Length: 229
Image 1 (spheres, rainbow, N blue to C red):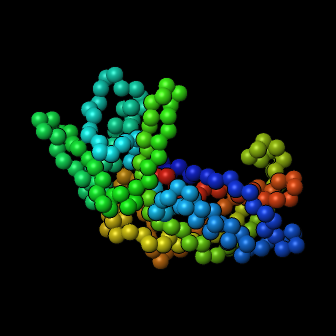
Image 2 (image 1 turned 135 degrees about the vertical axis):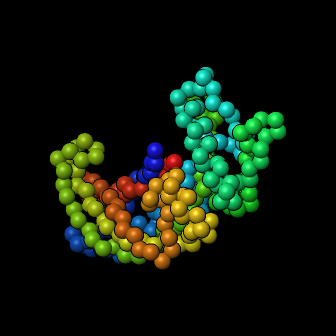
Image 3 (image 1 turned 90 degrees about the horizontal axis):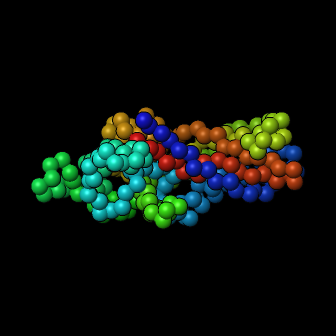
């Protein structure tokens, strides 16, 4: 199953209106660009589009499926069995067979893989550490704001009366690496048709702002996409 997780950032934004009743598209453009730039700086990632590998810590050696695996452990092993060979073929990982263990492989990062890796970890309630790894690319450059519209809902995302402002933008992806461009079909086969963003192509996107009672706006839109196999 191919999934795209939209990781959102809720960010306070001062009034982006001219005279606070006419929308200022240039200010919305700056706000959107700052959001995309900020997540790259804060997370130290190479771009706003990330291919999720699974819960894995490098160097890593394949672990066979077991009847004692939890549902999550089985699912994670199945994901790794698809993602790791692909990125080894692309050149971001090394892959060596394990001696005397047919069908099992040992993986580690190449220099190219280290450059594009985004790694994070979290601890469970039991104290177990889970490592999440992705390869990220494609900084977003906002080209222009094409439309701004406002609508008020009796029950918005907060569950209460809420005014939502939808901001439509056009953007391009900067510096799509050769390993993405040269392996488009393989990446699309595993991560989905829209998982490859090419340079010099303009893409549309809609951003959401929430207008609060104080008149200020809060940005509630994805800052980077985590694409799952």
